[in-house]
Length: 359
Image (cartoon, rainbow, N blue to C red; front, side, top):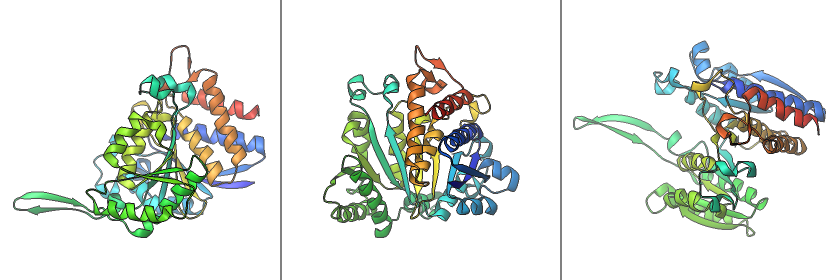
């Protein structure tokens, strides 16, 4: 099987973690008899430097023609002076919208080998953490109207949060479908006691739930959800929520698993093509020092194999290799523990590749 992957290496540590992930994909291809063709698509700060914009038209075309897209990370202090419409992150928003990627899926899973790195009390951590945040991605306040005006001698800013029934309904179906393959529980997060958009969200999600009688639906206010994620994360199976709340809660969820460097992410639309990335930033302070943790990006590639390329066995092989490396005591700096051996970005990638090759 031959698949074309658009590769956005990005900024900071992006080229390093993406480079190791491509090595892992090549190891998968060699073991399972596939060929992956990589097409570079500059985006972010590096694209601003080279082309003046964060998402050049050629890069967008490359992504739209590929079977899937792999992204490292974009942004950094170097481009903080850019106007809002030309910041590196704007390229990512433009790409999501152009690809129609309305759902972001972030697993919050704690590897048992990293239980000691969990910041929660041991009696909470030992119960395990394994849930998924399904976040609406191209609606809400991030894509609403933003304006600043002068009124009565002072500036006033307004950001519009808006949702349609269809935007809510389609992401709810994703969440319920995922729950059917897991532990059959969906927790919908909103602020229906304050926000009109949340009241609409709650009504539509409740309507969608009627099509999934085997799945339990719970509603929870976002402030309570933020507390419950650190008090009792084991209660959650699939969380579904809107864009802003999902952005915040998924970062919180990732941190309780031990390290943000371990968490992958996928963004999906109607078709099989998706955008896969780690959830961490570009970490310019360690760029080029072989200190980055590539596992989040490598696990994002495993999600790509599973969800976009229909290669479940190959995804299993990557995830098993990561588990084996951790069991063997190798750690990058962000997950280093007493009694383990420190590995740089390149060695971690090589070690995972070797375990894929061993079948």
